[in-house]
Length: 160
Length: 160
DNA sequence: CAGGAACACTTGACAGTTCAAGTAATGGGT
DNA sequence: ACCCATTACTTGAACTGTCAAGTGTTCCTG
Image (cartoon, chains in turn orange, cyan, purple, red):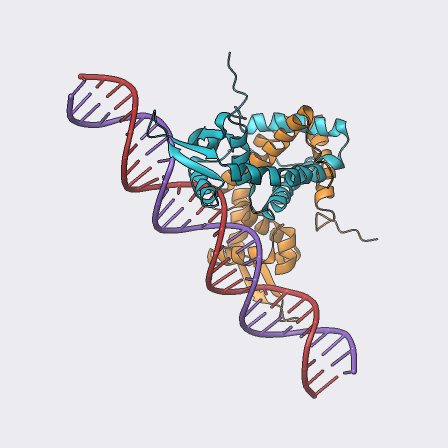
């Protein structure tokens, strides 16, 4: 029933740039990884595992850390396992639970790929901005992300 | 051969928020459209057509305007045509060229969906920010986008 | 005015994501 | 102790986008 709040010229201009970022940045980052045989989600999965004690995390937690659904992770884990970069085994304490572990080869792959990934982030974003702009951008994006997706990220739990 | 320029804590923090935006914003916008039976690319396609003289654009230009590959548009156009929202016909002056036209039904669909889309943009981004923050965000994103993808957007051609 | 390069688009096969359904294990209530 | 809801994960089908190849048309060059 209420009137649509259309965008004025100023807002439209800002919006185009924001949408442009959301449109092109993912592709750019994927490209840098794809040529190393990984997509961004697979990379996030390996990275999350490498930070965990014993390089081991339960599937559902890992899905959260890598920002994907459990189903998505399950498919990705099959690919990563086939390539020998992770292993899955049932937990001994709760046999519903599957634990994923980074293999030696998986860690090696991560170490091999990480520099190129970081460099692509720098080239795409950091190198175009002053330090002030970067921090400003980070802060405002943080505000928006909290608005869209409160309670992210899944690490940094509030433990009061 | 060169040393990897890793991110320090400050940079990592900013980066997480930027990546978070690029990760969650598209999904959020898609969701608002999906429940109206369109994805973002299809919406952009219809929107671009509605702004064109005679509601008609050549496929390859339309692909640019909607920010997708020609192949992607070709698949999407088939879906849109099947649902009766656009029509395609060969150009009379150059028979390699296919012209896409928005139908009356397509225009009606766009008018039906647009308010919800704009509202989702407002809710996701605009409502969380002050006007200053919005303009600042738009400007910085513009800088990054120009860095990643110089010569975008395809409209706003420099005609010197 | 051929012949081939370039252009405009379409198509089919493939890979990754989502969604709904399926399997298996656990725990809580009676 | 048993049932059943819940939890944890996997799987297969449907769908979308990408890539490479294919078709048809036009332009250019000798």
